[in-house]
Amino acid sequence: MKRKIVSTFLAFLLIMAIIMPAIYAKTAQQRKDELEDQLQDAKEDKKEITTQKNSVLKEIEKLDIQISDYEDEISELNKEINSLEKKISTNETEIKRLEKEYQEKEEAFIERLVAIYQSGETTYLDLLLSADNVVDFISNYYMVEQLAEADQAMMDAIENQQLKIEKAKADLEEEQLEVKQSRSKVQAKSISLNNTKSTKQAKVNSLTAEEKKVQANIDKFNEEIKKAEKEIQEALKNSSGYVGSFSGTLSWPVSTSSLYWNVITSGYGKRDQPTAGASTNHKALDIGVRYVNVYAPADGYVVTASKQSGYGNFIMIKHSNNLYTCYGHLSQYKVSTGQTVKRGQVIAVSGNTGVTTGPHLHFEVRTNGTSASRVNPLNYISNDVYSKLKFW
Image (cartoon, rainbow, N blue to C red; front, side, top):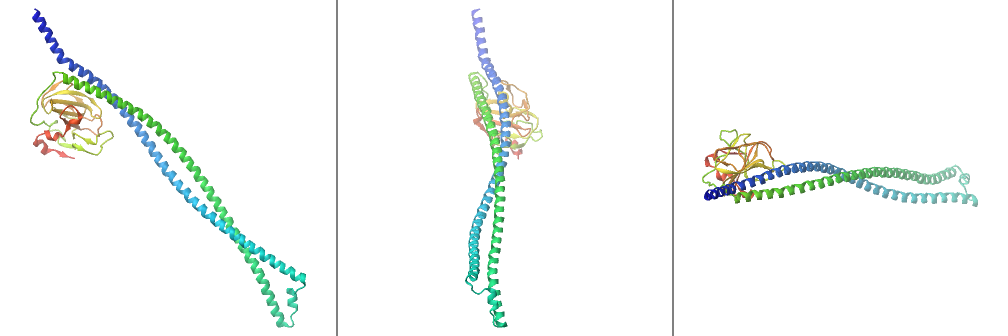
């Protein structure tokens, strides 16, 4: 009786030793799934904020171009004003010189006439009347006419030059006033643009602060996810779990009768980012199928069937201690965490979840459970399948 009780108790302990780690892993996996959902929401929030910020930055870029154009215009106007002011200064100096010359000649001319009359010297009339004959009269008249014309021409020339320069001065002053008014308008516009830019920058700063807040949440979620992954790995490691073995090659994960089964839309290695959030170091194969069954490429143990950031609906299968396969962007699960599978068994349906540009199957091979151990899946498939693949 005692042996039966002891045997029953030992059997119970053995069963608990087997199932408890799996239950523990599942609980951690559920928590990880919840965190993944929160992380995805946070990333979507951040993406929206970044989009808004980029839109504002583009507006600011346009304003900067306008401000630069106006500043160039102001610079050219200032050069024009300086040139006009120098020209005005030169003309003013010339005007003063001509006015002084005009005044001196006018005063000299008047003084000469006054002196002639005051001293009783010969006047123009005396000069004409003093002629002894017609020839002398004509000669004297011509001399008087020449003298008068010379004096008058001198004064007319000075007066005309003065009027011309004064008109030029008035024109230049009017141009200077117009330029100053234009500059004032441009400066006012520039101030308005700068104020607008400051307003936009304040909005960007606000968005940046909000973005930082979201990023802090993302960092927090990532830390929690790392903890959950650590717990899962620890639970699996401590369980009697699936050991398995693998040799030979992996079967192709989709049926060769499926449309585009052999089209590789994105190969293993470096690539341009196909969409925001996608990896540029693509350590996997993207197979161009649409919503078709996905098959286990070898016997194995389902480490996880859950949502993963970027991957969307995700499955990882352990085939041996040094070989794992992973599948992303799935639309449906056909297996669950902790389940064992056979080669050729349907495990999922391909889809378009997570970060993707369209429906396809993301296929990875890892040498252990970490993403750092990803290797080229083409090294594990048959030559027959490889020979039929088409790389876009």
